[in-house]
Length: 236
Image 1 (cartoon, rainbow, N blue to C red):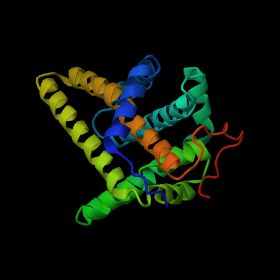
Image 2 (image 1 turned 120 degrees about the vertical axis):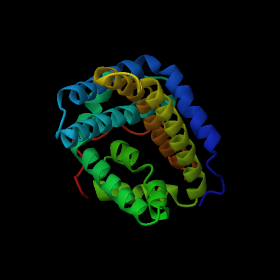
Image 3 (image 1 turned 90 degrees about the vertical axis):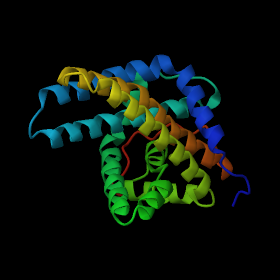
Image 4 (image 1 turned 180 degrees about the vertical axis):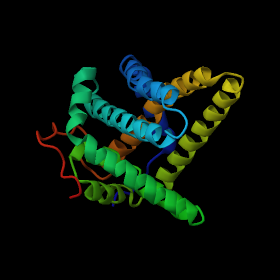
């Protein structure tokens, strides 16, 4: 086991640096994909909240996968792939990635119901499950196991990163809610769209940077090979 530790400040700083350097890719892509969610919020009203949530899950998961591919691409110091290539790289594993997101949400949700602590524990040990699936083309359950393997020995530091990200997201969300409180339905949808555009790249980058940081601490290569042609096994 490595005696080095994850430094939350460095992880967050690296994520912000990639955000700044790759904003020309991250933000336009977020504008496009989350416009679909914003439109769904406007059109699907009443009892369609579940459908809107499903659309948001699919779109958010697809975008997260694209960001992981981007972080993989810049591990050698430069970006070689276009936005189209980054999205195309995610396409083969979208369904397993959605399945992983659903299971993670259910597990963490149940954990929070059980006096919060189990939810925080699961959120920590599964924090890099999605990047593990995207980069290593593992199945859903194998990605959960891989995440726990990478986090082992660095749990408190990873938990610290998660707490900072949650706190920042809550503060920004509260400010956005206050600013949008006097707006109508369209205004609220636009405000939520802007919030998605700004926050989604950051939260996705945190997970990807954490994944590669943990790999480095475990002595593993961080300039990963190109993914295999076939999709990941769904549950293997």
